[in-house]
Image 1 (tube, rainbow, N blue to C red):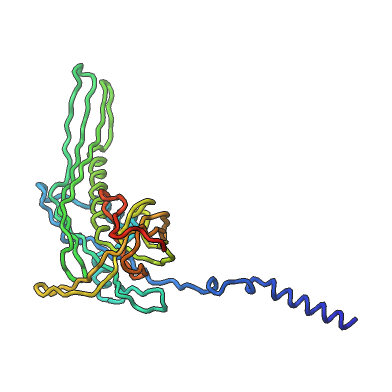
Image 2: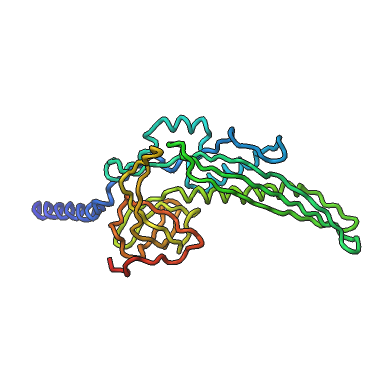
Length: 312
């Protein structure tokens, strides 16, 4: 009886071990992935140095500044800092060191930082009122225009990366019939819409100089950090392999060579990561050190490879 009871207990113990979740768990699934530093590019609007070249020397650009701050934050791509905090951050070089997911080994990739500087040439609105032939209805058109020269400055090297003319126009209209009176701040409505359009164009220009990264590769499937504000399903991105750093003998500035090795097409887009597929055989292996840059919207057709597509 005792022997039978011992055998039964042993069987029960063995069954408990075999049925335990850890017995079937994959070791890879149990590995904890530690949270890292926020390595999004850092950007700041140089508010104190906005140049006023409009015909109104007392023009207030606060609506433009607030809207640009909002668009930058909403993009989810950048860390938006005021100038004081920005200057403090620039002193800390560790803020720009990107560590690969390989136990902390540093890669050659670094997080960029930008100043946004603006020279505003047109900022305001005009209005015009017209009556119909029968003098029954009165139409008011409020046209707001924002024009500026945008300068994107690399904060680490103090060099201007891009200079571009930004222009946006918006129209607000109201129509009142005889005996009717419409009350509304249509001029402000038009100006806010023009500011929004101009700021969206500024962010799109900034994205052109913002690198995105390959997070993981398996076969011809690539995981990236491209956010929904930048890429949609079906969009194409070129993949670049970072090369050696080159110093310009004339200016002394150091730039890193980038070589295009293939292109990807996004197949799904998420808040934290997006998936894509390599559309033709890379000229060099795609790794998590590679950089992604968007193909311009007007060129959003399947890029033509140098070699025919090959299986992976």
